[in-house]
Amino acid sequence: MNEAKLLSSEVFLLRSLFIALSQNKRLRAFSERSVLGRRMSGRFVAGMTVEEALSACEQVNREGIAVSLDSLGESVTVEAEARASADIYHRLLDAIAERKLNANVSVKLSQVGMDIDPLLAEQIVGEMVAHAVEADSFVRIDMEGTPYTEATIAMTERLYGRFPERVGTVLQAYLYRTAADAERLLVEGIRIRLCKGAYKEGPDHAYPSKADVDANYVELMKRLVTSGVFCGIATHDEVIVDAMRRFVQEQGVDKAAFEFQMLYGVRRDLQRRLAAEGFGVRVYIPFGTEWYPYFMRRLAERPANVLFLAKNFFKN
Image (cartoon, rainbow, N blue to C red; front, side, top):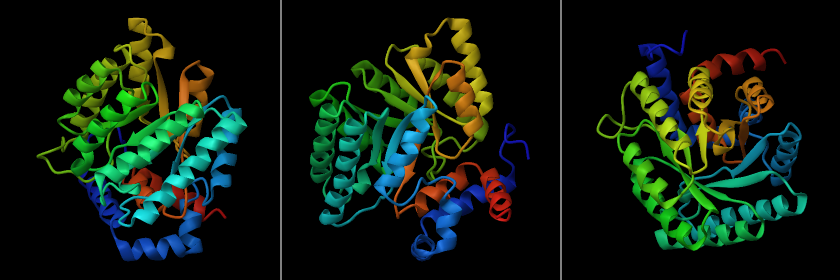
């Protein structure tokens, strides 16, 4: 199936299925406890522990590629769990400083208490960003579904006011509002990671057509890389990557104005090729026992990954 074409009905159904499965609590509980589930997730998840994630980070750094570390977890409803999640990030930031890693961290607000109390989440993330200043690192506040969009952007703005250059967020090209959100953040100098979006959103919030999402992504990425604010272009779509290559060359954009960002275990060949061409590349390395929702969203984003996993699974 050619993914450069409009989504076929089969691909659309697969995407919808995997997004629905990502929210299935029983299947999640079974999968996260099973040897089979962990084996399947291993392509996209760098292990269950902090040390496994740091080892993966060191390996990627040796290839001249930067890293964003993400301790997986979301939808926390108990304050003690939110603080335990934050403790993992403080361990990561200590290790980044001690081992002199080329790395930063990414965190979801629902992982650190946003659904309990937004003030709690802001306190926890604020402490994290303060630590990032000491570690000479950076905190990326990940974007979740549309119920969190405005709150995430607003919190990023407040924290950026306290810690300039040390915190940024993510915008999703499939949302209608993203062009306006990008302008809002760029005026303040806040770094944006641009992705397509991996949550289930209706046509009242998001473009329903892949072609429209791709077109919006290309327009947004051109705006970001010429804004004067460093940004992350998060895509594995080689058509879009090639469009960026051409745009950079034609417009004389400095390669230092942005970096390509890709996921651990996805298009390693393209990651290495871009790094060899002198582009900045950052790999997002997720880890932890709560990997199931993340894994299912990766399958939803690119259903071809299902065939890839099946082929590699049965080789062993």
